[in-house]
Amino acid sequence: MIDYEYLLQLSPYSLNHEEKQKLYEIALSDLGTHHYMNCEIYRNLCDRLGQNPPLPVRLFKQYSLCSVTKENIVKTMTSSGTSGQAVSKIYLDKETSLRQTKVLSKIVSDFTGKTRLPMLVIDSKAVLKNRNMFSARGAGILGFSMLGRDITYALDEKMQLDWKVLDSFCKKYAEQEILMFGFTFMIWKYFYQPLKKKGYRLPLKGVLIHGGGWKKLSDIAVDADTFRKGLKEVTALKKVLNYYGMVEQTGSIFMECEYGHLHASLFSDIEFLPYSDFSCVKTNKKGLIKLVSLLPTSYPGHILLTEDKGELLGEDNCPCGRLGKYFKIYGRIKGAEIRGCSDTYEQH
Image (cartoon, rainbow, N blue to C red; front, side, top):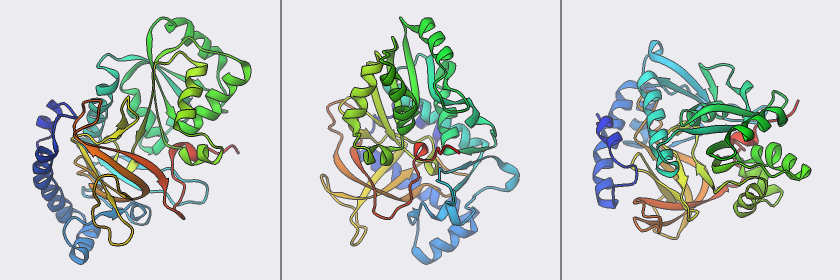
């Protein structure tokens, strides 16, 4: 199997196209064989569709796809879904869960530095109630929380800004770099808008990492630039960085660099498939997104067919200096379910 310890010693953006291609040729063959031998549903799919077929993400809503025994499952994560939607269930053993956490830390620290910063989470602590059955939202919060210290939640259980907590955090860290994390739409609605309404500008500097929830923001004409400018109006943040990822491939996220490009690390890859024949397209062509991850061994989530559209911008030549593919996302294909983390919070 894959030598994960060796890969974790490498810089996450240090492999060029040829080096990564060699790694993936062997690694995906090993992963495909592992899941074929250990997951009956996946084996049946392979027998009909061929080796290593990309699995539509909706398949995880319909079937229990697992490549380890029930006794070895330590955590079950569920995808986000609005009321009435089925949710995906992702089964993790200890090794896969730990690997995902390590890789997430490795990727994000390439953008934020290795020092653990005081962290403000723009969410409520109530979302973490059941640690063995995590929603995508809860899993995201817990995963990113590993990167910070003095974890503080900005919202109360009613999803209102906790002004007392916020004031205390600001006084404590006004002169320091901090890490802020949250889901895009929730940050805009429950953090930015209340601050803007009161005319407040918090003395918090550092970096904000956010992801998910662009569907609702696009509905109210808030794009990435508007979001970034808005957050810098109400804080002293130096960086506002987006990321792309999904619960079916937790850990191997795609971070946005200072030039606004999303990047694939050595732990993941991305392809863009035209709707006509699903063959891989060349640079500057748009298509349906296929995601590849080296991390999942407890479930066959290594090659996924998403419901998102995107465009490959280039490879190994981003001005930020990171090797690998870089790209942009255009949102869901028409008729796809809303499934972003911050699209799912509804007030009852």
